Image (cartoon, rainbow, N blue to C red; front, side, top):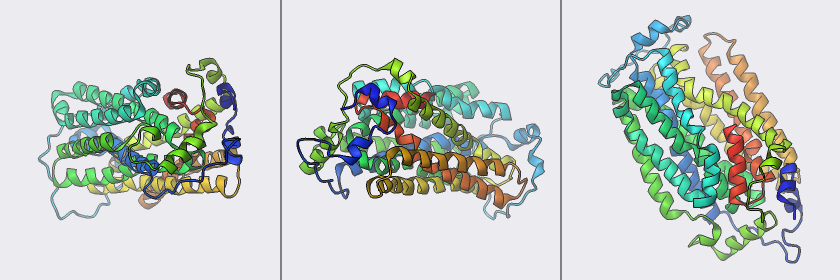
Length: 435
């Protein structure tokens, strides 16, 4: 058995369990069927959880376009006249009942960025708390808190910019614990050769939540009122929380309806990866080159991803001059491609390892390389095409789509190099995500 420190030192620490029986004295338990299994049911529920999570996160990006008096933005923006109006006439009049605010571009930037002030605070505590109370409760209440705060967004906006910024920061606090909590749960649920598939399915909900919420927010703003954007998604979040609490278990041992075969399969596949170390090896972690490689990759990917996620609707309106309906739809298109890529790349990664005998480290490196260089090339190219609307949308879509390969690259590598304990996996992922 590898020591916890040794596991940190090698990003291919999973290889031994990939190639040889996990238990030396007994044969490996045959893989349990995926259909209707407890582990895939968990992946599906997590999928919808992250769907709600990102719907709650990005709805303000579209709603803010309708919340702000357009005359205020036009006065501040000196580049919006570069591209001519091109939208076709809209026969149905845009609903104008929602209240408008005199927020300039700088104020809008503070509002959109305030979410991350809270988000960054709970990254490390998220991994620690998950080891104490469990990932199920932490993830559930993290999303529930975000949903409840979302319901109060219209009231906070009426109170003023300060109140809205504080509210969004509180939403960030709730969402900050979710990824470490989910990673901690997968350390107890995901067999090594199914990690790419299970984690890709669960985290792909984030992309689909973006895909659905962006155009839906635009439609709600256009035909109804921007306040309903927050009411609708907040209620959906509460409904998901109820289902999560009643249908999900913390570990296979505590699941009430899991089959005996599946339980034995999961536990036996993880047995040789368990660590007896209960404290966090901070010094070895800080000296671990594989961990810092994940940190650098995570930082680089998130820089682009969250910049686009937050500001793409504003770019579509102020630069490319799309109306609110077109804005939501076209802003969602890149994330639909990313969602599809995440699902397919997860299947491909596990097939390359299980059927084609590619090493884990090779798969992680190749997928991370494609998911980093591809988006960078097309994003840079998008900055040189001027007002070619079709090409701008195409380049942004291709860039974000290729980023989906990272879901089976560095995004899963935390579980490859960390011992399978709630404390280690949740904490290690938190360190990378925070930095």
